[in-house]
Image (cartoon, rainbow, N blue to C red; front, side):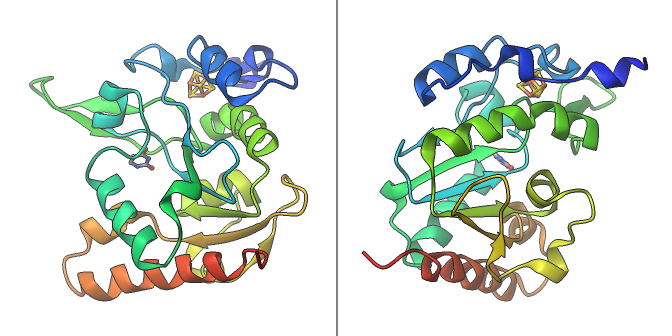
Length: 214
Ligand code: URA
Ligand code: SF4
């Protein structure tokens, strides 16, 4: 067996646990090598009965230090977009496809540069995401960017082709998936940043529209 084949969080995930117990258990996950260099596990957070569950890629530098998802610049932009889309921020739960920060260091070793997680890490960490989906039972799941889309729909997922429309989500019974761009893509856009932001908000409005009527 190749060493890669052993990357798997499953042995660390307690059966049938609620979010609090899952979060405690995830703090000790060694399902893949990413736990070695990161500061801590960054588990999901938010409303435990959220109707909308949003999935990012992985914690960034600030999230890694603070232990909470989406507390850095991308998180601030996401909060604004959620609000502009008419979603109730108090009724959301945010998490990431991968729960540890993957990075390389600059030459001097001072700065940590985000490195995209690979398919091995995505599949290793997926049991935590599935456990969160089971515990929260959202009506709508939002994939923020290609990595979250691949985690939820498989490696053939293309966000440019499949964004902004409700898609079936076999992993979460009764829930629909809406994919959109990652909020960092708005921050990185050199031109037309407003249009890129408006696209994110439009997709989140599709997610709002996919909620069951009250
Ligand atoms: N980007 C993500 O995908 N997730 C975070 O938690 C922060 C930035
Ligand atoms: Fe476990 Fe996921 Fe962290 Fe890997 S990234 S050690 S699977 S929590």
